[in-house]
Image (cartoon, rainbow, N blue to C red; front, top):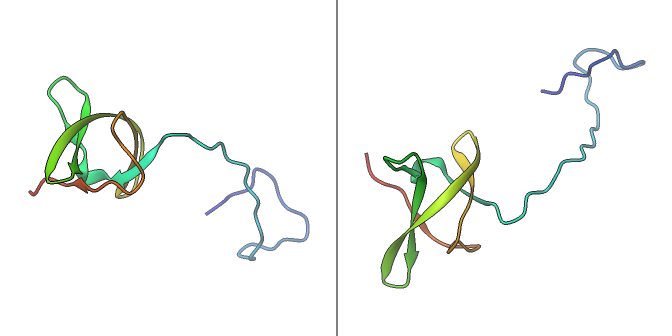
Amino acid sequence: VIVPDRVLKGVENGATVTVTADLPVSKDVYIVPSQALVSRIDGSYALQVVAGDKTLWRTVTLVGIAGSHAGVRGDGLSDGATVLAPSA
């Protein structure tokens, strides 16, 4: 839901409108399931990433969380990488 900061002339409440948003683009941010994030005792975060026939822990910086997904940055991450989520 987008709420304008002023009344829009000729637009009734509940009307459908077209909105254009100019948003900044973050580079080198990967979207992962938020349940895949592991919180470490030192306050940092890590992901378990599949690398061939083994898994590696990668330290990541949390950029943000939206619903069930998180944006992260970190060395050793790449597009299409498989991350594992710990079981409950």
